[in-house]
Length: 320
Image (tube, rainbow, N blue to C red; front, top):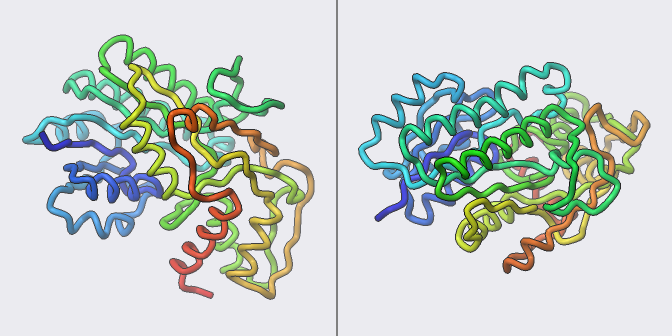
């Protein structure tokens, strides 16, 4: 039987790439997105595909989503939950943003899945659940104390999924990934840098001192890893860090690479301090050993992912 997947956040950065990948594998896909951050143009290739349907809807409007799911002639074999607030700083300014768009979306989706007997869930979590731990981040580390509302609500979502796996889900996969970069970006440092340079090609303001070190992961590698995990991880509840293999990128490299590609004459001005904003983790030591043992390794290093993403996003902007 052909797989029929529900993809939430389908018009977003990762969600739209996921839709394309699922369609390429022969699946039927129903996508929903409230278009707060997602863009319909991200779905331009998918909207031409006969196996794809898109609905502008919000998971926090259960009645609307209930009707969408009930109206499908073919039952869903699983759901990919990509919908969330992806702007960590917005969640710091207003904690309701992450409560509503990150946690309640998960809560409401699980209710719909239970009612309609959708058996499997793949969930986009984050390395932000770990908080600012001064050690290598492995999947079994704890206790976990996130330092952003975004991370807190993703962790709460993981807990809700764990309870659902005990109650009614046949299987669930939780993907914890770091900063993901690439085309169709709706947020993130590269996206922000390019937009700043669009407004002021003479100077790029960078929050912090540029020494922050984090793994950056290209969306193409992410999609490959998520598909590999759902194909090969067979536990009832599966949870994996996804990221580059022991490589990180300094924010200084990120800024210099973006300036070189987008506005070579621009000067870089650092605001100082080792954190870009409240909730920012300045250094991340991220283990992907569990995923490596499963049999998957990334193709790109963190710097290579940044190089590719900068080129892609600058090309999309078509302003420089």
